[in-house]
Amino acid sequence: MKKQNSIDIPADVPSHAAQEYLHNYQAITKPSNRLFLFAADQKIEHLNEDFYGPDIHPDVHHVDHLHVDHLFEIAQQGKIGAFATHLGLIARYGKQYPSINYIVKLNAKTNLIPAKQRDPISQELWSVNDVVNMKEQSDLNIRGIGFSIYLGSEFEHEMLAQAAEAIFNAHQHGLITILWAYLRGKSIEDDQDPFLIAGAAGVATSLGADFVKIKPPHATKALSNTDALKLACDAAGNTKVICSGQAKDEPHHFLQTVYDQLKAGTSGCAIGRNIFQRSEPEAIAMTEALSALVHDNASVERALEFYRKALSIK
Image 1 (cartoon, rainbow, N blue to C red):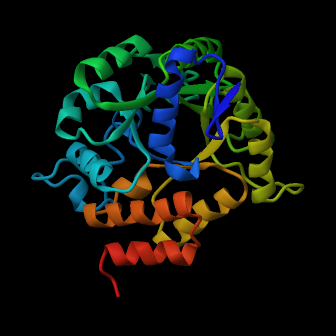
Image 2 (tube, rainbow, N blue to C red):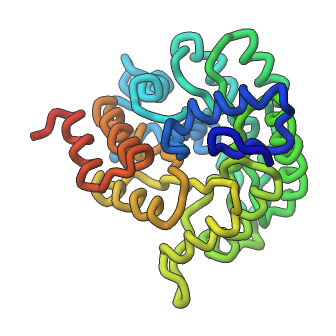
Image 3 (tube, rainbow, N blue to C red):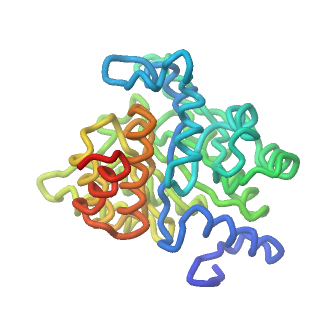
């Protein structure tokens, strides 16, 4: 693996694509070498359940401000590293929001079929070539690709093969690669088991991913939450670990959770509902706070100051 400007360039990035890789990597990680990913692939993954409900701000589904616009408005106005969503949504909205750094999710499934009925499989819907063609034709800031795998599913072999090919092909074009590595299926009793989560992080490295998005492991009798997360970061080697954000939480507790994960050794965060289920001003303010944590090594108290200032709260 070659190095330039303290950034690892994988050996499957050809020399003619190395500058493109560096450009894309620096664009999404800022000077911190960490990634703040605004993750919004829920339109397929969770259907409509994340966009309507008593705990979701009316801005998300107001008739004059439909929730897809809400996502893109936050991504454009907020202080994020990159915005991850499916290629179809980017095709529909990208020209209206050309300044966003995009990560294109290539595969997807809905949540309609429970694991007790059938082990999950997330098939590739678009190829890397589709992404490259749209990048060239649209001139959008497409920085990389994302792919989900479900370890423990009886279909994991299909997802592993598709993910490996996608990662290699993306690197050939200088694109950054992010793997969503989750534990799902009838064989999985605990999808936050720290040893299995560490195993999933190691799989991402073995597939060549630049970043791996994992569900935060829980503590055990032998491991604290911090130790459990350090185990995953160690297993990932030089693939950088980012944690998923989970359900919406009150700001202070949520920011403290992200801060603790960073201190445990993660290289950023991937947040969706804790951003977009808020009003647009509050969502943008939350991106300011998260950026302070991820990019500036701010304390929780300092991040809250950014949040309150952005909302003009005294």
